[in-house]
Image 1 (cartoon, helix red, strand yellow):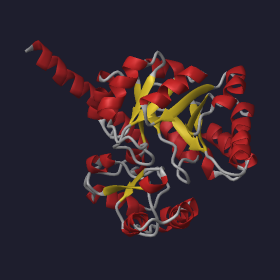
Image 2 (cartoon, one colour):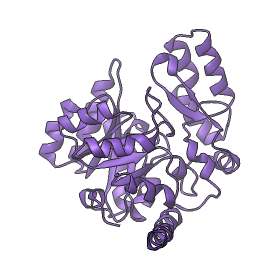
Image 3 (spheres, one colour):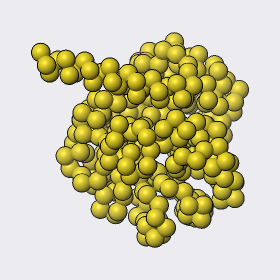
Length: 323
């Protein structure tokens, strides 16, 4: 498959791995890139520039294929300084691409352009996608209501956002939210996207560092086993439906403050849950496509199967057209 995204990023397949804090580390990222997709290191996993640089170098030892770094630009005291350090690491280490999310990366664009780093900004709405294009992003990822993590406040699905973004923008569009197999990839391309980003499906692989209990839960889960939380603090997040998620919803219903909620859903708690396999101890990002996860396989096999099965989907469509 050749699309504008495979050409822009010099990758074989138009499949990008979502940046997942604590999980998107060197071995995992390299496995995606070696399989022909684009792996992304999650910068938020690392407390300092030095540690991120070390992880970039470890990844480079494991793959000679393109990979990138995900940087979430957060509000708050000290967050901008941390983001600056992450961008410095990307530039100094000659990383091909950076995927940004959260606040606008506008102030970092000149240095990224100067260094030849490709910028992909992830957004949940058309208005933010247009802003990303205007500041010089090379491509946008637009995520729909189905996605795990943060789908924005508008509750619009990928089925609508993807073609609207393709109609509106002149830069390549990557679609996220609900994609887990070959049918989703072909559907995204048909809607005007140049590729897809997948997070939840990559979680259910043998290469992922998450505890096996999470992967076992995913195989049994239905598409209804996720829930939206944090709407009351304007930071909607889709997570697996568990005891902690239900507790957060109860807190929101009684008007809990952001500070109270963050004590329950902090990233440190999530890290412990991933490692120990505590399915109810924290909130875990999970997309609705968990209902399409039927097995645990290696990243290599997952990507190979998606590409192989894409040919079957295309053959089926060609037969429909012929008839």
